[in-house]
Length: 404
Ligand SMILES: *Cc1c(COP(=O)(O)O)cnc(C)c1O
Image (cartoon, rainbow, N blue to C red):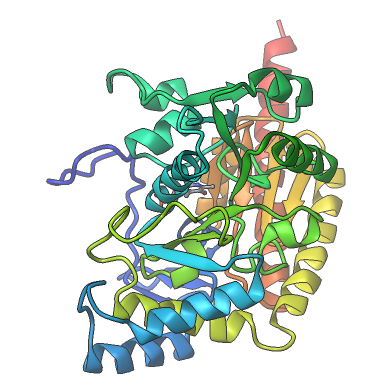
């Protein structure tokens, strides 16, 4: 990769830059058009340059950007009202990223126990394959050794157990446990849908032991799974929920939602953010909600996601040597591959379609939620061609291996 710059090289960037976007399309300066099946990693829910978003942000930019949380911010009060009306939550704290929302959730769970007379309860049970962000606390919750390596002792207070193993969770819960933290669909971990009966069992375990259940819906939230939030069709309600990515449609906004009970320890002075919830960010969040909450929007996401999944299932049958499994919910879709997932990401980029890898040898398909049927057909044609080439390459390699 011949990219030289003064940017800290923590990303192995692809040598590709976009200049403009329009709906599900991204354009380079030289006029190449790419089909965006990454959405800035589940961020651009309304695609690029969505007219309503542009108008909302432009109008707000001409009025007021930021004043600080020392004063009332009516736009944020409105967004919090709308999020609470649409969910289990009674209260919202706004930030600028997912990891910050996780920090808030961790602090809130600890403070809840402390305010309930159990200050010894500070530990949180988390799951292998999870991803909760890159701050030191979020990393400790994530527990990925590769991400933690070299950064000193991980922040204490997290007990990581295998995914979907209730006995392991029960064993991990002790007198110091405050909460259980889980993504209802593990995004970075490979688009693994957590079985609903496992979530129900976690809910019961929390209720029986005075623990808080925290759902990380940073990737799944705001329509990605076809429901406004993934928990809404699991039959399980958390006490705290973190959201971010799609909430600002590309403007950095994160939020920690909670019940009044779970948040009872978070009184004046216990938490803060300089930028969190400023006017410009809240204008972006409200504009996203205007569109996503509009009649029929999520029904269309569900309809289109079923259509896409059906076509992907056909591709899997025809390219069994390439695609091992199609999984996910709504427009958070994972293709588990037979060859290395990165090979399909590369082949798709050659088809001018961008996707993103995930754990468990998965390619994630994350189109903007506004994608239509023609664009889905176009995407499927590109995936089909990429799989054909990949299948041929591997068949040839296998033959050469057998040949003397
Ligand atoms: C992206 C993500 C995060 C981290 O969000 P940042 O905005 O990058 O800090 C946390 N949890 C989940 C589930 C995510 O997908």
